[in-house]
Length: 220
Ligand code: SAH
Ligand code: DHB
Ligand code: MG
Image 1 (cartoon, rainbow, N blue to C red):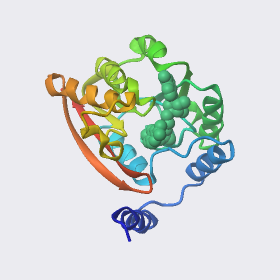
Image 2 (cartoon, rainbow, N blue to C red):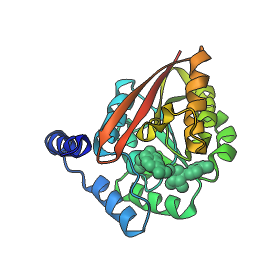
Image 3 (cartoon, rainbow, N blue to C red):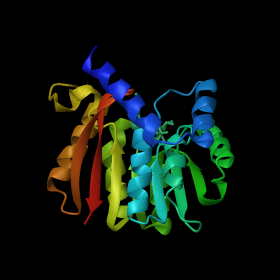
Image 4 (cartoon, helix red, strand yellow):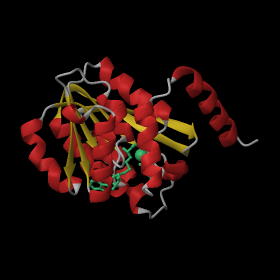
């Protein structure tokens, strides 16, 4: 058995025991699959980590960049108090429409808003909605460093920023790679090297979504 198969078994073993079945999350995934959306939502364990991190800092105002079918959105919105709010940015009308249905089914329509459009166009308009306590960046990877710059600008001091998919099978360490997605992540790492306003670390992950990882930054 490969290390990746082993890790997948462990992921199932632990998730079956520590993550209660949630009909809204399940139907968000099955509706996304039926609609032909790519199966790239966060894993259940990463979704739960997002919820735990957001609730640990008492997040009231959450920003997400990259909605897809709102699977990660549901996890994050579950961290919010009744008067909290989450805004999620999505470029694909078809994804936004399905996300809207999935959020309504999860009973979260009252505290979530989907902003349709290219995130680089909608982010400047969010200055009036800032500061955010927690930001999850998970959209097109070539623009990851630009999204991080925006997240920094829109965050409160002590806020957290999580960036998904910063390892991508390990190619992020390959200087010769000319994939724009890899370059996007490398530019983020270089930005953080000298950015005094953020304190960051990366954690590598392995399991059902292969070998990847996420970055966690605290805004100082
Ligand atoms: N966070 C989701 C997965 C997001 S997949 C989850 O874990 O459940 C990435 C999403 O980003 C896709 O829906 C894609 O349409 C969207 N996206 C890609 N480029 C974008 C852009 N420039 N602006 C906003 N959204 C974008
Ligand atoms: C891809 C995007 C993601 O956000 C992810 O978690 C995994 C894969 C992709 O575009 O391939
Ligand atoms: Mg992702």
